[in-house]
Image 1: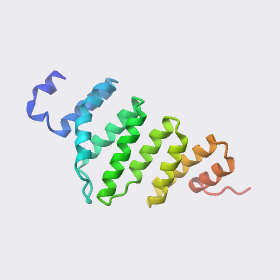
Image 2: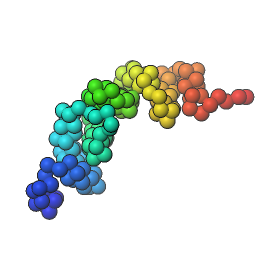
Image 3: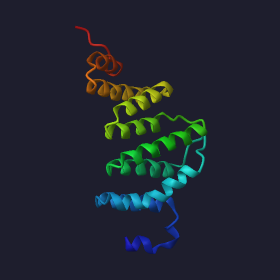
Image 4: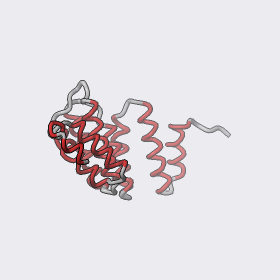
Length: 166
């Protein structure tokens, strides 16, 4: 850490924050990783997304920040960050479903199944990519199972696996 910090010209480079966060993750020090990612992840929210896509390093920062929040059990913060990223994507007329699904995942982990279902269904209505659609169907099937709706669970799982014939 001291050697990395000694290189002062790196301090404001997003790649430095990512590298430092990875050191924190490798040491299983999520607080340290979160500390390194917080500022660049916050700055990403302050900038508008570009229709051509974000810089790969910025994408890495915002996704890593979300997952560190999730791993720390800060589900409300993870959900709120994901929702803000979805809004940012929407302003740039980019697909918002991946971030909406992440917000739903955080809601699911905090046992807010109604909120998770609402967010998954919102993402489902927008998403066109079959891989993410299938993932959403499986997550909705899990929610149906938890609610005791076995017919609904089967119907949703058949979107993923196909129909089983007896």
